[in-house]
Image 1 (cartoon, rainbow, N blue to C red):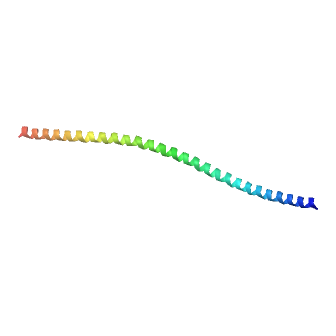
Image 2: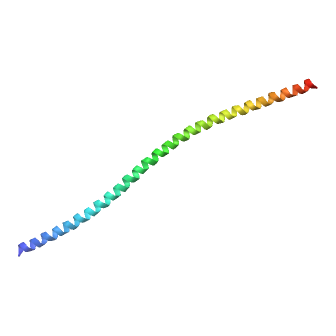
Image 3: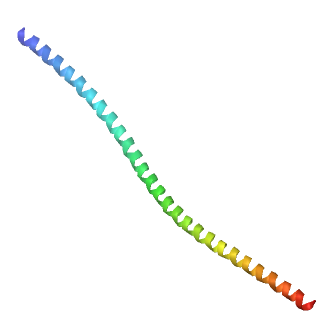
Length: 99
Protein backbone atom coordinates (compact mmCIF):
# COMPACT_ATOMS: atom_id res chain seq x y z
CA UNK A 1 0.00 0.00 0.00
CA UNK A 2 2.77 2.33 0.99
CA UNK A 3 4.62 1.55 -2.23
CA UNK A 4 1.45 2.26 -4.18
CA UNK A 5 1.15 5.69 -2.53
CA UNK A 6 4.81 6.39 -3.23
CA UNK A 7 4.32 5.28 -6.83
CA UNK A 8 1.30 7.58 -7.10
CA UNK A 9 3.34 10.53 -5.74
CA UNK A 10 6.17 9.67 -8.09
CA UNK A 11 3.77 9.54 -11.06
CA UNK A 12 2.32 12.90 -9.93
CA UNK A 13 5.84 14.37 -9.76
CA UNK A 14 6.63 12.98 -13.19
CA UNK A 15 3.42 14.54 -14.56
CA UNK A 16 4.24 17.89 -12.96
CA UNK A 17 7.81 17.73 -14.28
CA UNK A 18 6.52 16.84 -17.74
CA UNK A 19 4.16 19.83 -17.62
CA UNK A 20 7.02 22.03 -16.47
CA UNK A 21 9.28 20.74 -19.27
CA UNK A 22 6.49 21.43 -21.79
CA UNK A 23 6.15 24.99 -20.46
CA UNK A 24 9.91 25.46 -20.68
CA UNK A 25 9.89 24.06 -24.21
CA UNK A 26 7.17 26.55 -25.22
CA UNK A 27 9.14 29.39 -23.64
CA UNK A 28 12.24 28.22 -25.49
CA UNK A 29 10.38 28.14 -28.81
CA UNK A 30 9.02 31.62 -28.14
CA UNK A 31 12.51 32.90 -27.30
CA UNK A 32 13.93 31.32 -30.45
CA UNK A 33 11.30 33.08 -32.54
CA UNK A 34 11.93 36.39 -30.77
CA UNK A 35 15.68 35.93 -31.15
CA UNK A 36 15.29 35.34 -34.89
CA UNK A 37 13.15 38.47 -35.20
CA UNK A 38 15.72 40.50 -33.27
CA UNK A 39 18.56 39.09 -35.38
CA UNK A 40 16.68 39.98 -38.55
CA UNK A 41 15.98 43.49 -37.23
CA UNK A 42 19.65 43.90 -36.30
CA UNK A 43 20.74 42.86 -39.80
CA UNK A 44 18.24 45.31 -41.28
CA UNK A 45 19.64 48.00 -38.98
CA UNK A 46 23.16 47.26 -40.17
CA UNK A 47 22.07 47.53 -43.81
CA UNK A 48 20.28 50.81 -43.09
CA UNK A 49 23.37 52.15 -41.31
CA UNK A 50 25.52 51.24 -44.33
CA UNK A 51 23.07 52.95 -46.67
CA UNK A 52 23.05 56.09 -44.50
CA UNK A 53 26.85 56.06 -44.45
CA UNK A 54 26.98 55.77 -48.24
CA UNK A 55 24.44 58.56 -48.64
CA UNK A 56 26.41 60.77 -46.25
CA UNK A 57 29.59 60.25 -48.26
CA UNK A 58 27.72 60.95 -51.48
CA UNK A 59 26.22 64.11 -49.97
CA UNK A 60 29.70 65.29 -48.97
CA UNK A 61 30.96 64.74 -52.52
CA UNK A 62 27.95 66.56 -53.96
CA UNK A 63 28.40 69.41 -51.48
CA UNK A 64 32.01 69.79 -52.54
CA UNK A 65 31.02 69.70 -56.21
CA UNK A 66 28.33 72.29 -55.54
CA UNK A 67 30.80 74.53 -53.72
CA UNK A 68 33.25 74.22 -56.63
CA UNK A 69 30.54 75.07 -59.13
CA UNK A 70 29.39 78.02 -57.04
CA UNK A 71 32.95 79.33 -57.00
CA UNK A 72 33.22 78.86 -60.78
CA UNK A 73 29.90 80.68 -61.31
CA UNK A 74 31.09 83.50 -59.05
CA UNK A 75 34.29 83.84 -61.07
CA UNK A 76 32.34 83.76 -64.35
CA UNK A 77 29.98 86.48 -63.10
CA UNK A 78 32.94 88.62 -62.04
CA UNK A 79 34.60 88.05 -65.40
CA UNK A 80 31.34 88.85 -67.18
CA UNK A 81 30.97 92.07 -65.20
CA UNK A 82 34.56 93.00 -66.00
CA UNK A 83 34.06 92.28 -69.69
CA UNK A 84 30.78 94.22 -69.70
CA UNK A 85 32.56 97.20 -68.15
CA UNK A 86 35.39 96.97 -70.71
CA UNK A 87 32.86 96.69 -73.53
CA UNK A 88 30.99 99.70 -72.25
CA UNK A 89 34.21 101.71 -72.05
CA UNK A 90 35.21 100.62 -75.57
CA UNK A 91 31.78 101.50 -76.93
CA UNK A 92 32.00 104.99 -75.36
CA UNK A 93 35.50 105.47 -76.79
CA UNK A 94 34.30 104.29 -80.20
CA UNK A 95 31.40 106.75 -80.11
CA UNK A 96 33.79 109.58 -79.17
CA UNK A 97 36.14 108.67 -82.02
CA UNK A 98 33.36 108.49 -84.59
CA UNK A 99 31.81 111.72 -83.40
